[in-house]
Length: 309
Image 1: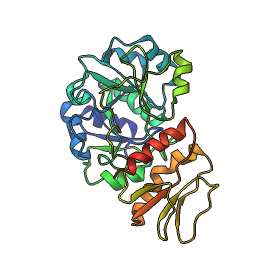
Image 2 (image 1 turned 90 degrees about the horizontal axis):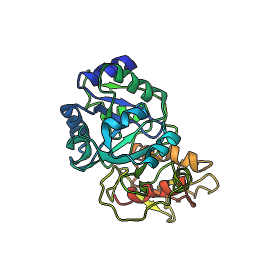
Image 3 (image 1 turned 180 degrees about the vertical axis):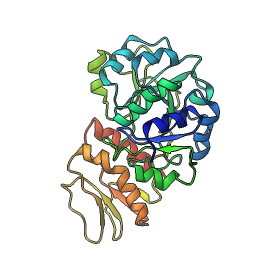
Image 4 (image 1 turned 30 degrees about the vertical axis):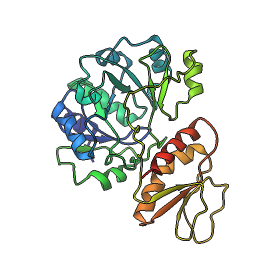
């Protein structure tokens, strides 16, 4: 495990750093270094037209990466950054095609994790201060929520010059809310911890329901998928893995993977449950989907995509 100073130096020298955030672990490169960013795509097996999010440490860096930023985007940033929110903005000339997937937009986030912020601040002292990072896992598979998950999945792909920072388990456990801020009204492109209601209350704007062609992380029909087949709201059979809120009893001869007490715990431990099922070589995971809006909606989004594997 590296120190933050060493990790910042690795980024500056064109190497990769896997780092913790409050959502999931990211695999990062200097956002101004094409060769380094292309290695992320190579290691993940990620399509080149699939954009990566630029992580920053301060709102004053936005104007380096985006142009024509609407006032409501700054209102959201002031309220929810650092935090689990990515805003999609019109890109500036700094945001190259290899960051944006060839689109005219760029995704930006300030993560709410002490280690991630320290890394970004340290990197700003010696380099660009911008880290391009998707989740630190193979494309389309389960996002990592611990140092061990990253080690298990990527250690063979990383060199001695690359770094992995250990920040314990991710506090939220599912990816950030992605909000399109390129129009007059915001639009959610990927649900997460920051909800429709929170966005509308903060901006005083009604969310747009217009159709958009912007490609963002997690927008493929199948995503977040373990090796095991994910089945939703069906009766589990003997030998199946089972994921449901604590209030639901475990059927006979079924392997309980997690029993979260509430929606927050469900989100925090969902990807752990998926990885645990794969470690146990289970062929099926039956999930009782949580009901309701807000975070439950984001969990159902991940479950529906995982079940398309």
